[in-house]
Length: 261
Image (cartoon, rainbow, N blue to C red; front, side, top):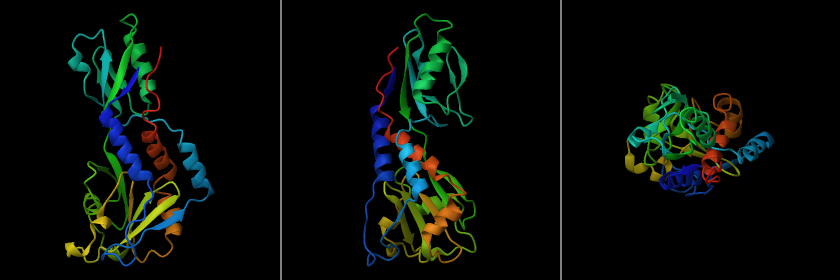
């Protein structure tokens, strides 16, 4: 049986709305530091990747937390709030260390049922997903430590993400920092001027919001054609196809309510 905690459903819903919702906020004459977003439509390959990902099923990640509801286990505390470790494993009472990351909840349910069936007759159990691992934000370009970083809360923003990446590099062009977000129609590209970052009141709060799976790119010089930059700079670093897969997998988390054996 597969059960998804209602809090997890709400978090998933917020994440998917934030990642896939296309909304144009503000205008070119808006507050300093914020410019109207630009929509860069997907090419044919990206459209195919997006459409293929719409059937994605969520696969467990390191940091995910779940309970096991197993009627034969007397000490149920040992089956509560099991967190998948960075190496992808989790230790379950009675069966020991099990690889969990990379499997769907249904697949892990089957694996654990088979393991417990060695010692228990009719070993029916339920996996209750309690928490998702932290969402990711991706920071590339002229920063000290480019890479992917955990977005612990929806309150974290652009400045925190840049700080996690060590801040600007010495050749960074702070006047045209790119925030790139995937939507249904294409990439939403926000150009943000952080050249006067010390003047906090001069930058619109709208320009500083970050959502799960956002990509932040700090250029060395003026960006010019952002569609070219995405194709020739970002795609070799980060798989857009994998981003689609992660986003839609969360969107589909509650499509299967229970597994009937």
